[in-house]
Image 1 (cartoon, one colour):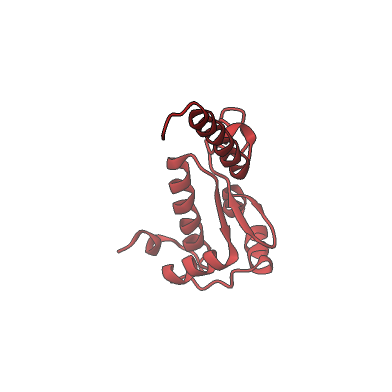
Image 2 (cartoon, rainbow, N blue to C red; image 1 turned 45 degrees about the vertical axis):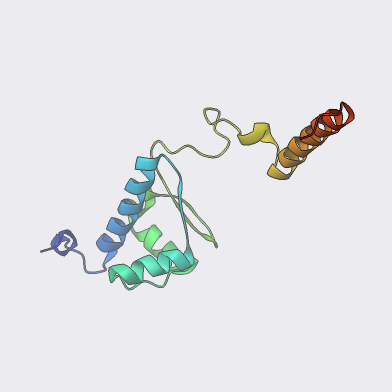
Length: 130
């Protein structure tokens, strides 16, 4: 017998809670936020055998009726849900270094290209072949 078969629920919310806890646990082990859009949540529910119309209104009714779901979910909106993951580092946390010093990748590549172009130009002027 599988674990969810022990759940004593007429509505199937216990199965849904287990799905959310599974994703919460995965995210906690990686210390990353867990965000699911409605399409991915629908696919997960289908794969798990949980009948659920994954949309804002349906989720809101589940959220409003279950304190367990309320504790698991940090935020939800028309795009999807974000799980409450203990220890997850949000982008922009003070403990997380900012990639490339806050510059976008195009700017960084441009700076590298400029530096290399200047180096090659100065080597060519000095008669050094690269």
